[in-house]
Image (cartoon, rainbow, N blue to C red; front, side, top):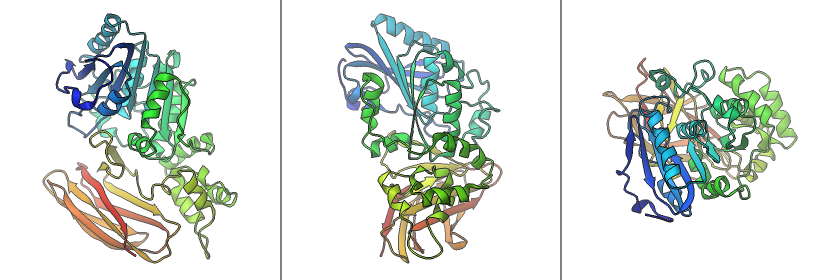
Length: 432
């Protein structure tokens, strides 16, 4: 099969296995190869190939490969690794491939970068990558700690090999996800020549780019050397944002409130990374009067979470993809900490308080027992929600909002096993 294809034309079961790794190939007629690397998916479940439709629609006659790590080892399992590299290299020679590209999200980005350390890739696009899974370098990242500890041998623990790579490296990451910020700074240390594209959003930049209608343009930017997509890059001081991450992760927020308040007063609220949302919340709400004008500036800069209206901000929670590029408001999380929190924040400057907000979704607890969740708004306990075991159960809440800035917390006490807790958002409606 040659030329541009669609997902329906691809037999996703016709892959070749190399130990822990699967490679699905779609032949093209152009001497170039695009490798789409699958991310983690759902923990403990072999991931489906991702980016299939998007990749085939944008391949423009290129050869295409889809790669996945069945063991979710961040491509550290040696079972089949060398055979995989050899197979891609042999395909390159057999088909006269002159240029190769790879891209992926999160774990997939880590894998794409590792390919660049072993193969003569022309370019890689790394979306919200982890730069390391090492105990010392990446000990700050508790989203995947349990999974990383289960990896028998960390044979390729970081992306330091990119330092001497001639591959063009494009790294797009969220300044609003504190873990992604920390990894992006680490990547910059490993590969100072990398092109950093900081944007607003959450860890799932696949959804974020789709929401902005820029996911196709990003692939063409990687492969065609064209103009950079209109991403509305973060306009703040990136070095300041990088300096915020380790302090927030260490729960040191001293001095941030004064700094953020000054930025709001000087009309730079859109320069504030999402990790400082609590400080921004307070700075945008003066003791008396309306919201500061800085909030309206936020909306114009796609500032997260103001532009999106709602976000789940990570607090010892891991995001995962659902069916690749899912609907924007779909997302799942599972809890890993002894005390799990799921935060829901919303800004609507056109609303006068008080008003009511209806929230709906599906919630389930893994394992054999359900979980009771408490819902809080500030210090107020709004109610309790039962997360049933097994099949997801519908959850509906109507809460009174006392201002345009809403901050809800779903809290639960978990036992030491940290049984997964899943939430899929389906509804948010302003009632009045």
